[in-house]
Image (cartoon, rainbow, N blue to C red):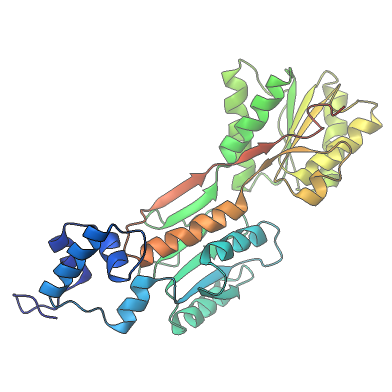
Length: 339
């Protein structure tokens, strides 16, 4: 396993000699099916010439998909967490990867304890799933395995973080209201300390500005609840009776908006069109009318996070910084009347 310079040959040396990327060299040596036959032979010849034989530990890391992955979460009850975890498990493939799930419950000391437990089990990689889209402290750059942050981005730009594009979600919500002929659009949202609340307001203003419009009244912030949705809408309709569209920061708020619109004798969607956020299906599909809302594609986010961990284990450079993943609008009867 020594090269001409007396140094142990590495996977990097094999890749360079074969003229391929480290990831391709890894796949070729591990018999993965997505490598062309002549490329695989070139890599095997290079490995042979360099007397390169990966040790079992390295082979486990290179193959990646035979080992164990840690999922470090901060809120197992959260409805944002569960679809992400489901998506990650889909990507791991049933029975192919052992998943260790640790719930730190949002406690930094507990999180450090869980992290040590995962590393002592020799996990190949870690996905850290946050409970909201606010940046969270990085686990640091000294960890021996790749880490990907999902939903809550790391506060260190050297880490790779995947989070839904809240700003784009708000833009598509407002563009939809405008396409439905609405011009006097108000915004009711939750706790203004949340990054999600600020990102959704910014996206709403982007889309309104592009159409030469502005919000009807000031954005209304308080809590992520139906109760607040009801109270805020009563205030809005008293101050701005000509409102014809309301974009809500969550589906819970939107449910409250629908209640008050009904109390005030406004028909939805004829008089006022309402858009929610989250596509929490049990809420959205049981609303009267059913709720048009933005879906953050959280299962897809979980799948992507798992895929990036696999790539990193395979030796692929997965990049760094925060990547905003696309979201989608689910159109139901609160914006377009169902006949």
